[in-house]
Amino acid sequence: MAKKKVVKSQAKPAAGKKWEASAEAKSAAGTLRVWAWVSWLVAIALEGIAIWWLMSPDTFFIDLDFNVWILVGALVVIAILAILGSQLWKRANQHDPASRKDAFKFFVQNQLGAIVTLIAFLPLIVIILANKDMSGRDKTIAGAVGGVLMVVAVLLGISWNPPSVEENTENLAQYPVESERIIALTGQDQVFWVLNGSVYHLCAEADDVNIESEDGQIYAGTVAQARAEGMEGLTLEIEDELGDCGFEIPENIDDIVAEVRAERENGPVVIEP
Image (tube, rainbow, N blue to C red; front, side, top):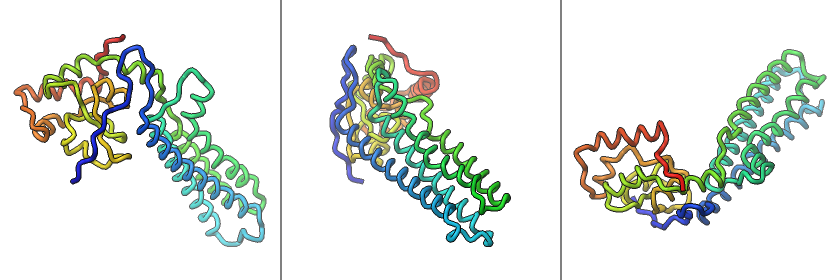
């Protein structure tokens, strides 16, 4: 497997300084947002086609039972596209979050998935229920399916704990326990991660850090920088990575893994600036 280029993280690690997304993170976020909008626009276009179909008696074969199932199929596809767009949008916000200082922008940026989902569903459901050419049975089936799918898609589109510039700024405080652990294992406070990852790793040669990433690069920096870029903590595959990286495996490796797992569950020890 080809190793990816290793670059230094551009997150600002100094305490008291405002966090800024790196150029690479902004680029990855931009790409994710483009694809999110593609998914949403296709969903809305499909909604428009379904509305036109329902509003045009000449195209709606009311004598054929399979028409309601065509409509149900369209609702399912709309839901899939809306959910896909929402998940891509959430990932983009992880890389390039909004600031809580502008409350309106912060709300819209983080809840846009739910908003667009409502736009992609609500008009169609209203027209289904108001359509005079559909039988009561067909209205019940299509309306119920559409309502359930809309609720599910909206709930999945909501960002329940949205990231923010302020939160990442706070994360720039030093993580003493984690930093000391990394120094003890590798000799320096330097870890590695990829943009679409959730944990940081011990070296650029570790197998897990060489999985496909969104921009084909591995990022290197301190524990604080990795945390600021959204990493949840050290991988639990510590023993394997020590071997991959050529570091000595300590006798208390099981205890170290248990400590890392506990930190993942209970939260890290942080010294506020």
